[in-house]
Image 1 (cartoon, rainbow, N blue to C red):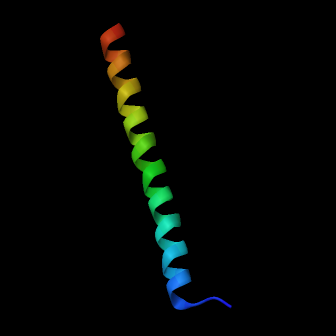
Image 2 (cartoon, rainbow, N blue to C red):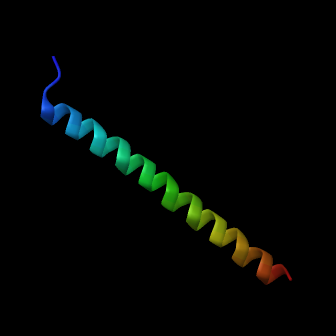
Length: 40
């Protein structure tokens, strides 16, 4: 049986991991952009 709390917990964990991946990719892209500027 699933309870409402379980769904909220699973949703929160999934959202947090999605957000973490999004932030990480943004940081990665900006770091790559900085490296390109330094090389040029």
